[in-house]
Length: 293
Image (cartoon, rainbow, N blue to C red; front, side):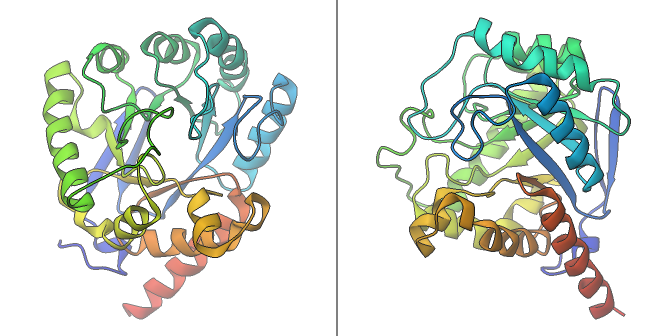
């Protein structure tokens, strides 16, 4: 079945599966709830560094409709300072261990470090969300393959410390597409099966406002990979640059992007504001369904 813009159910059948989870598409769009256990993340740093508060917030996100909780212990905002492996482990492992037995809780680890990913998977995570899929070292992919985990590979130009220092592309859509094509080969060589892989175009990671808008407009281009697409635009600076909005004013444009995304090939939204996003997606899907009758 060919992909039709505005028709999420026309997405070709595919499966995203790994250690302890499996999702078959087409199906209703999914939401991944952001759980930053960091002191310095751009929108919620310091809010959930206490394990009990992190658990409470995760429970609420699941109650609001999140199907995956994405735990991160290192800020990846532009110019963020790296943290040590030991410090990142100290932040994330107690939280993941506490969440592993929560009903209806699938945990993803948001990390660039192979050792942190391996420890998180051993502690109960089932997916690795890797912003540094542009690396050359195969250690991360080997850890994912060994664990049989899901792998969310994001496109980024540079590193969090350098990514916004004048990012340039000849054709951002073509270059992201080429990156995904080349990475698929690298992942397979490392032992990761296609069904373990999902892709994220990396809005805001080594992109200008113009690059971000071009990627959003061209999301359906990446359906050719027949892999789930994940989009993370929640509270991002592009809304500040385009609309002059502060972080706490960015929900509405984020919802607009979410609805656009599921009509153009995206299956999963990574967000801070779970309940309004789920409600917006279900409403949009009801309209899409009625329009096809």
